[in-house]
Image (cartoon, rainbow, N blue to C red):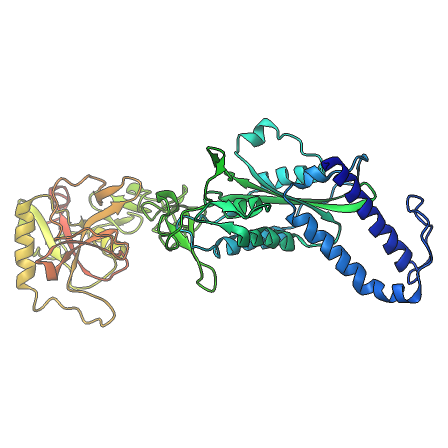
Length: 492
């Protein structure tokens, strides 16, 4: 019975083309009649008048018939050997983008709403497989092992050439959803919804499509193929399971796809891998670590965004690549450790266990403060025990009413110390590179609010520690340890 239907379908296709040639030939330049077409009576004026509208309707009806019948296009091949037209080029970048956008838009419109529908991405590997499959036209050939390993699912369609665009075909697949009952997980009797269920299969996250023109029997046909990975339409006990879980959009996304993509009209919602939850980007080929929101900089660059090029020669000191700065030898200062420091330069504000602490009368950024301490032959203060913390905090508290610096643009009641967060070490380190063994962070700190990598003594927290943006302008505390003081020239 099915073979007789195949033969009849081929006859209908052939007769339609022959009638089109007979009717349309009156309006076009004369061409030799196709010898495969039987001799037809000369069309009358009335029949020719109806040609323009009727023939178009006939083709559309035939297209609709081929798209809704419950079989794949691999099953409607005619007994004749098909002749392929030379392979078409792969889909253009624009066509690929439009098909991907259409798939994601349709997946955002399912009813009932999907709680775990994933956003699709384009796969060139799947696109090549789809192009190979489309080039087979009516021959469904088992996929090679490399494709089977991808768990590829397919949507395929064979239509008369020019009858529909690729977007029309994909839209027709989605329209099968009107026959699908989600609650019963089945399609209406004698109809197919397999295209629809594969298109909206929630866990299919990658897509690739291809098309090909070929000749089947006496008709020019166009094959459309879309490959999905992972595939769908899985069966349990002989029955296809539901394509997605219903619920509020994005309410059942997995941990690996915790973002929620919404279309421009804010409709629906698709689970996606968060593209950039840090809302930042790295410069100079730096790599963003989305779990820590820090840039891993290539050699020669530093800074939060890898924006600083490191090319600092240290004349009397060692270069610290993490900070792109010099750590000067005792007795030298300046950005390149080229300045011989002359001592003494002022009186110390505090003496604690043989170290001299100087409270700056001016404000600067963290790295500006570090440089200025170094120019004086010292370093930003290292507070390494509770005794030093208590004395410094007490001293600063007594200065609180007078430690304002006249600068309306910046917060200056706080003080920089020499502790910063080192991305490469994933920990806070002193300016000398030493790991800290004592901390006095305020309650809830460090919290990385404002992406703070530098540490200040915070006035509002009794001068306990807080992580702060390094560009903030604070006053600062310079420290001169015994090795620095031993270089001082105490002569007048």
